[in-house]
Length: 259
Image 1 (tube, rainbow, N blue to C red):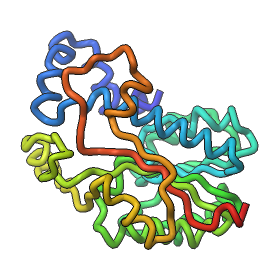
Image 2 (cartoon, helix red, strand yellow; image 1 turned 45 degrees about the vertical axis):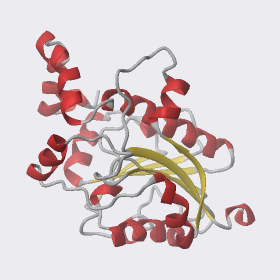
Image 3 (tube, helix red, strand yellow; image 1 turned 90 degrees about the horizontal axis):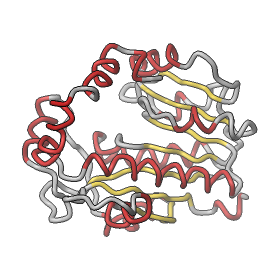
Image 4 (cartoon, helix red, strand yellow; image 1 turned 180 degrees about the vertical axis):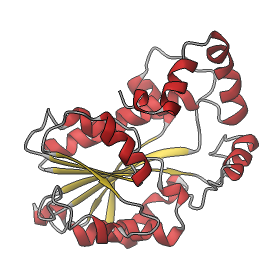
């Protein structure tokens, strides 16, 4: 539905019907980032389950930062009518999504904000679809690696200040390009540079706890493809497993006391 709302999306859908494009995908994947095509669906399954687990444990609000064309909140908002769902995205992307979502419940809000110009805590608390008194599950998928380290820390700190009742945060992080835990090819690095989307922040999964603890968070769970593929795609036998991005679920310290 969302893909059909833009010319670029319709172009991508047409590509999926092209035999040449489908045949070329494995070659392109190997040239840029081996195992990436399977990484995306298992990553999304992990985040979806983390979100539902939070809702089942007493969280009553979900905020997706930089949601893009992700469908998770749109799919969940009718299933959980008492939960408030808020998507935050750049105005250009948000406008397209608002055009695509013709029907939605009152508990789903699409907030257009350029976070490169406006801080999260300056935009979110005043939004009518957001309630600062609720325990909130935040998602930031495929975004933090483009922010400067101080800005990444600022996201964690902003969430704690905004949602004092409790914060659980699921996010993706990439290991340094030079790390043996990253199998991304040089071509992808060059492509990101040409697109003016250089990676600004990286983190080894082994350093996750030491990164989040000073910010007032604890690690609840992590997932990478070596774990997630057997869990979510047990019948797949990929030639390559993506290495370099992992998913983390963290929670602000003191949530148990605030519950």
